[in-house]
Amino acid sequence: MSNQLNCHPLFTIRTEFLSADERVSLSYKRARLLVQTYNLSVSDIQFCSQSYWSMMTDPIMSLDTAMFTILAAHVGLAVGTLSPHLKHRPDFRDLVNRLLRFETVGIYLLSERGHGLDAFNIETTATRIPGGFVINTPREEASKFMPASTPAFGIPKVALVMARLIIDGEDRGPRFFVVPICNEQEMYKGVESIRLGPRPGTSPLDFSITRFKNVVVPHTALVASKLDDYSMPEFPLQAWWNEVWRIPYGTMAVTAPWISSIKAAAYIAGKYSMHRSITSKGNAPLPIISFRTQQWPILHATAVAHVMSNWYPIAIQQTMDMSLDPRVRHGMAVIVKTTACRHFQRCVPEVAERCGAQGTFEHNYMARIENDGKGVIIAEGDVLTLCIRLFSELVLQRYHVAIPDPSESLLAEHAHSMLDENRDLLRHIPDGHRGETFNSILLPQAEPTIEAIGQAMAYSAALRNGLPRQILDVYECAVIRRDPAWYSERGLTRLSQRMREDKAVTAAMPHLERYLDDLKIEGYVSAPIVSDKAWKEYVDAMPVYVGNAISKSIDQVQAML
Image (cartoon, rainbow, N blue to C red; front, top):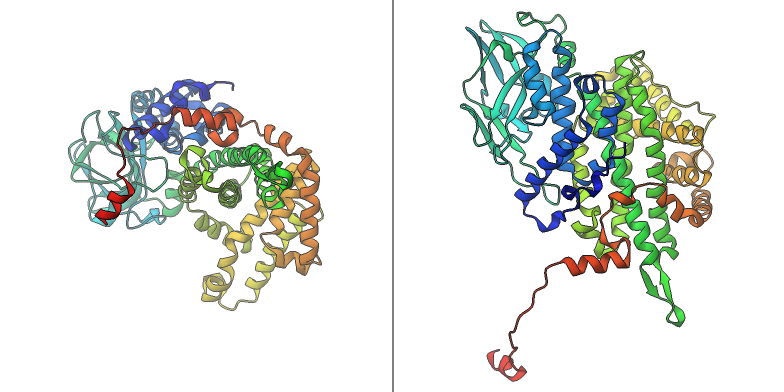
């Protein structure tokens, strides 16, 4: 979809010149613009259509993480959760229509301060009374953390609140309830929002602690197709997973902006390194890209960007393949998020550092997006916790994911070896997967194993789709760097690894500028260091301090001392 959003006035504003609250307000305006531009239907959102994924993968998302955070909850979680109930709950139609027009912002109040990822054991209560329910936060630890619930930016908000359904004193398990949070000016009675402090160096948003004091909602607030079904589920945990069924799609969706961010960081650092020069012998300018220490991080990020960008749409198809076991589909989302986000965390800081002092400033994008990226590690499921769950189930062979054949590549062989090694270890542990040995010996291998599987999948997809051999080789070398001991044990000595990397970089360097342009991210890059011309224009636009003060003479200054 060619929407030219990057040229819209809302996206050409230099946000570093705005106050924090002005930036938050801008993010809400941008979110509304995205919703209006894509004009998704309920069906698009419910079934995650191509239009839905086009919005979530739009590179514009990488320019404003606060905007993306608003949209991920509003569209993916709030509207997504309500969408399948519309057939039997026409009373939700008006609310959903207001959400689709962004007249009201939807937030998703699941996690609690004292429980975090242990959201199955939340404590917020929804007690049935004649005609409805009373929502309460029983103690501080049960406060909802941390979706943006303040009324400070003139936008009505409504929440899907996960609360324990209490019927005649009996806990019937957690359910979602629709709870109005605020209008354009103030909170609704009984709802309290405490705005959290800023997260340093990130796109600001009005993140909050939310709590409830005797908030009465009608019986229609219960998010269910059958309003009178208050029965205790036969399998409570599975019923809870059915309630939060949008989370796996969210796990997949939150990954997309970080792939675009890797592209942007590679492009910025690459273009900067081509024109930034030092003085060499004979006073001739020598671009810093001439140095291998500059070439590797930029080629590394460029190769990762190409490989991840190629793999992501393939992984979406697998995540949405309803013929697969739901656990496998969620597993794919976990693998993709883990692989892409850890690549992001290695690539972006490295290329930012190679831009020197320029890489530390917000106007050059990389420092801010690096900090923003720390939030995505937690969003829609903490990466490590997701890996522990998936790893444990794969090691126990409760189900399987399709790892490329080990004969296809070194990376596939590595992935199979990691998984097989841990399965073999489990067979020799006397106290099984619930014992201390599993906790201390196997669990630390959870994330490296899941990441190895993702790297093998991504490489396989790149190989099958014919990405340039130079890109494949640089990517392979980057992955080898993550576990050099394993590859050394397979006969690829430390020196062989270095020579392999040198060969890959040497072959790729002549094509670097083309590889950067092929990322198709230039239109979304506003970092002024990409060219000398852009930098001079940026400096001309900045505030200049001048004055008419006259300094004291040296003698006067010394006399004062």
